[in-house]
Amino acid sequence: MQRVTRDALVKKATELLSAGTVDRVLGWRAGEFSYDVTPYVFSNAEALEKDFVFDDFCGANFSKYLIKECGKSEGKVLVFLKPCDTYSFNQLQTEHRFDREKVYAVGIPCEGMVDITKIREKAEGISSVEVEDSGYVVKTLYDGDVKLTAEEALAERCLSCKSKKHVAYDELLGEEGEVLDSNRFSEVEKLEAMTPDERFAFWKGELSRCIRCNACRDVCPACSCEKCVFDNPKSGVENKAIADSFEEKMFHIIRAFHVAGRCTDCGECSRVCPQNIPLHLLNRKFIKDINGFYGEYQAGEEVGSRAPLVNYTTEDLEPSEAVGKGDGENA
Amino acid sequence: MSMNEFKPKIVAFCCNWCSYAGADLAGNNRLNYPADVKIIRVPCSCRVNPMFILRAFQKGADGVIICGCHPGDCHYTSGNYYTRRRMALLFSMLDYLGIERERTRLEWVSAAEGAKFSQTMNEFVEAVTALGENKRLEDLRCKE
Ligand code: SF4
Ligand code: SF4
Ligand code: SF4
Image (cartoon, rainbow over all chains, first blue to last red; front, side, top):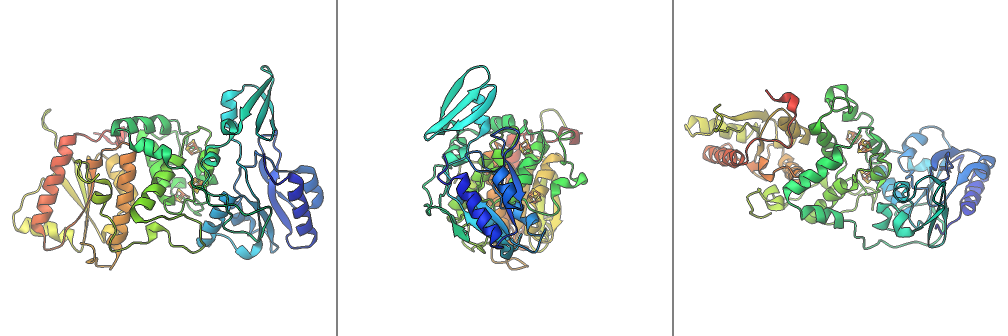
């Protein structure tokens, strides 16, 4: 359950609109069902009052929307940012992807967002999901009410949340949180401990399910290139129809590599994947390696920080020292 | 190729300013290295995009080696330092995906190191030969 209410956000947005500070509001609007909340741009108080929602289903990270939104008008846009979103917000500024002057950012605390696919695994025929203090009640068409704990319903990225602290905002609603001691690398470590054959089998099982919908790329704040290699019809990897097992790996290795050092671990890619592929396990591997090889680095923590892959020291590890040669030495 | 004698296909990306000249020197000095090593000359080891490496595997390479100037000796001052970071991360990722660690390598070979060039290639070919054919990053359509 969120600590800030929907009404508090609507009040803040209405104030800023009527004061002329902003001329539109990037927020969430109910979809067909209460749980498929969708991003929306509100431009007046009536629309806010009627359609604005804020609850445990508002997972979408709005940072990337600012790239297009800032180009639309001379006025400022109000954006609500959860702590994890502020890292993407900073990273996009580092990459000069939107005009900070055209944004009014309000930081909002977050208690974790729900992953509807986890709920679907536990309850069939969902008619609605009610949020209670310590968990969720899923109303189903045939099986009555199904009670779930927060742990059972929250997204993986929220269970391993790295920070409740906002690293950017113009104004903060609620209290400032802390950077957390997260266990986010534990799944990566489990994979690392497997044999290469087991790892290969694991990834083959995961990546072969990819339908190349490109949702992970489209939602990713680090994937904001105006021209993406994967849209090039000559890349040979632009759609699923002609892809074979090599190309599935190719897409994921290359995309993860392109965002390495810039990925803030916001978790949007895993959230939107319709095939439930644990994409965060690829990105976190790079983050873990970067931390281990070159010192701790959190993308988006500071505007202007130099990403590890566009940086070096003369003392860096050789690949053979970092990962061995495969002959059992060093590795 | 006889059934029981596997000869790996190796792609070697060699920097124009050092390793490519090193390969030349190896040739001039009549030092042997396997003919299955196909050299691709690049202006700097830093020119090697991770995609090049994956493409080489796709098109049938069994091993890919990148050779550049020793750290500190880059013709463009710092290219090889970026290569070093990129390759450490890429090789680690390939390993994480279960692709044999032995199939990729980064070595520093100067223009004066003909002997090192031939020794490096011999060692690498030996390691890849021991592994056998690349099955984990291949594209069946590209096989003969
Ligand atoms: S790769 Fe995934 S976790 Fe990383 S920035 Fe992109 S969407 Fe966020
Ligand atoms: S996959 Fe690479 S080229 Fe495509 S948008 Fe992401 S970073 Fe850019
Ligand atoms: S969102 Fe999932 S299914 Fe779609 S391209 Fe990405 S990994 Fe593949």
